[in-house]
Amino acid sequence: MAEHRHLEQGRTALLGRRWRVAFDSLRAADRGVVLEPGDLERLGDAAYLVGQDDEAIAAWMRAHTGYVERNECLRAARVGFWLSLILLLGGKGAQSNGWLSRAQRLIGDQQDECAEHGLVLVMSGLFSMYKGGCDEACASFEKATSLAERFDDPDLLAVSVLGHGQALIQMERTDEGMILLDEAMVAVTSDQVSPIMAGIIYCAVILTCGRVFDLHRAHEWTVALDHWCTSQPELVAYRGQCLVHRAELMQSKGDWAAAIGEATRARELLSGRSEELTGRALYRQAELCRLSGDLRRADALYREAGALGFEPQPGVSLLRLAQGNVRAAVASIRRVEREARSQQGPGAGPQRINILGPFVEIMLASDDPEPARAAAEELSGIAAQMSAPFLKATSAQATGAVLLSTGDAEQALAVLREAWALWQKLEAPYESARVRVLLARACEQLGDAETAKLHLDGAAATFERLGAGLDLSQLRSRPEKSRAAAGLSRRERQVLSHLASGQTNRQVAAALRISEHTVARHISNIFNKIGVTSRTAASAFAFENDLVGVEATDQD
Image (tube, rainbow, N blue to C red; front, side):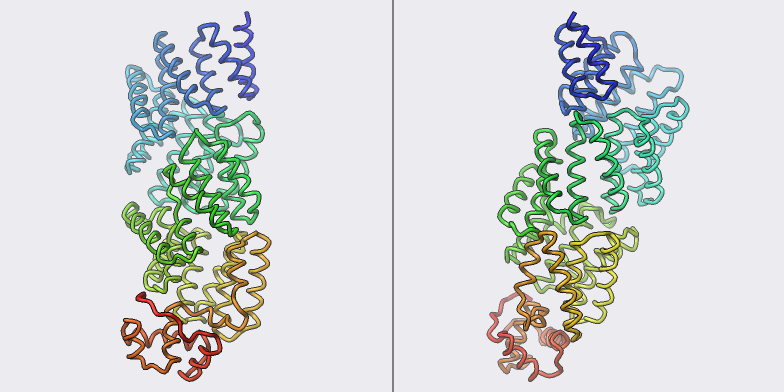
């Protein structure tokens, strides 16, 4: 019969990892004959691996029912574990918990321990971890690991070790946790676990590495995931996630053209499957458009990501800054900073860490150095605690920018050199070039025009190679004679304008609605930045650089 031929073809294709053939054949067989529970499991596996999540869940549910009717409780419980895990990963916590309870009940009457007990413990540990009960989660994962070793269950061993590592990382025991994540990945890369479990572990490990800013590990495992996906051309599940990871990696390494291509492909593959991941792909496209100078396209993509429930920050705030809408940039980054602080508390999670650098940049652009200084100090503390090179580089860059804005060019130069060295070690050309622009400003303030030019020329060459149109246009718009003037903040230009008009500190303070003490501080910073020691010389500089008559605002 044709149905039996389809069934054999499906079983054989599944063993050969020809997922599309397996799915089509098993589905064809299912239309003509009543499939055994084992074949319904296979149909669910094939459906999931070709991206047909709803059909996979339906097939697994039918397999579960078939096993229960046959009184094969442990097989039914194992299918219940997969349903619980996949539903949890899909954001359906209540349904996931329901299947966990059913699996627990099915194995509850078993007198002897078994591997299925371990699978239930894994799910219990995940629920505990998501609720913040990491000690309880660790106990569940450790017991599950023991059962996996006892019953020689590779899937259970890999997922229990993974969960234990994630729980330790959440408890800020990062080094211990990363060792366990590496152990889980050894089982995956040596092909010891099932394809579905392998894909889940790949993605979980890469995301966890990103959350702790371990970029080297994230890069290593992303390359491995890419090779794994490429070896299975019919695979759809995980391929979208893989492309998002690749896009992020390519952007950090400076291959922006390839990055935007991967992000676009990821968006196409993920559309209709995962709003969160589709939003993430859209956000990556938007970031690359913003950096290349296509601000209108970036705006549209950020809006699309936001419509899917993905928070398009700090990209939108940086976009508003690039558009010259400083007030909107400040309002949005302050809102995100407050929300991240309230959500993460004193532990400062990844969301808060990711916005601190942009927060510093936007606050400095709005001539508000105190919040920028506080954010840079917080970032420095987090970097010291986590010991991640990426965070150390970000922190040094933010600290150097703050020092530069307050006129301490000499100290800024030392810190920015450290940031530059770290970015170079991380092979992050865009960040390296941005730091070189800051280094040039520091050299200009110290009167070293020759070194400043070297840094500016080097930064411009990198921006041009990357296609960083926004940074390149900003760099080229600086007149050669006004580079020292470009180092002045907007408020400092206003103060210098009034000073050049012959006003006293008191008159300047009244005109700008600030204190005399603040005026004196601004004047000291101006003298340091433009390299003068008197009000007469500062006034001459203002006239030479067309800084007289700068409009005053109510911002301090």
